[in-house]
Image 1 (cartoon, one colour):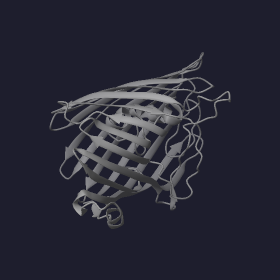
Image 2 (image 1 turned 90 degrees about the vertical axis):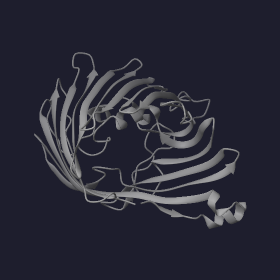
Image 3 (image 1 turned 120 degrees about the vertical axis):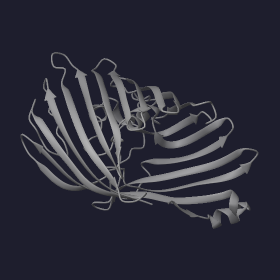
Image 4 (image 1 turned 90 degrees about the horizontal axis):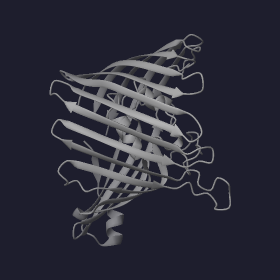
Length: 348
């Protein structure tokens, strides 16, 4: 259960009633023993975020009356295995931190909400990322993560974008949902790379009963070549299991193309859940077309609503010059790699 704190100082300054404004502290601490094996070198480590991403966050909302509300969300990534914060960037180009002090790298937004929907400003997930994580049985965490994300040519905005202006449709449209986002690289206008990190993305979907499906498009500009991406995904709840899949394409102007897909499912078993997936991603290059295929199988056992134990096994098969390895191992060209995660997750 989330711990809600009344924002006394804010309320005193604004003169609002206590019931109209609140701040919530929340987070996840997820510790993982991860092992990877490859033909060149193996690696064993205590890491984090094998099931859910470790984080510490604060969020709040104020009722402005007339159907309007204002809200904020500050969420920092945690490397709880060594006590550092997560990596971030400031301009959608290259990472500008290396995981030192705590930064609100996961999300830092302020919003205005109403019957019109939500206008959200700040650093946030990109629309093109949502289909990859929502329709992945492993939620793009740990060794079982979709190979599309591991191999993506989508660049720095594959997951998040800084300096973003977003709009979300209201939630009363009969199951239809959607969002649009514009993000900025904030470069000087008299430089050759003045448009680097600028982008536009959108996502629309439909969720009703057992069905959830969505499609997303994006383009991020770079001097080295604009990156265009699109993907679609879907899920169907059979009751005894959920089946899901996604397909994606990435294209760099004047460069390589990438294509990938996943098919998988979630199967409830008593107090736990079995997770399984097959995913692949291929990069179209001149005379090579490297491809990596992955199979992943995992089990999550819920000790309570907030605490779970989990285990995951994954195997990758590299072809046509690919050499991807799992959990920090190193493998040779066209060689295989195996990875294991064992961990505990606690949320608050």
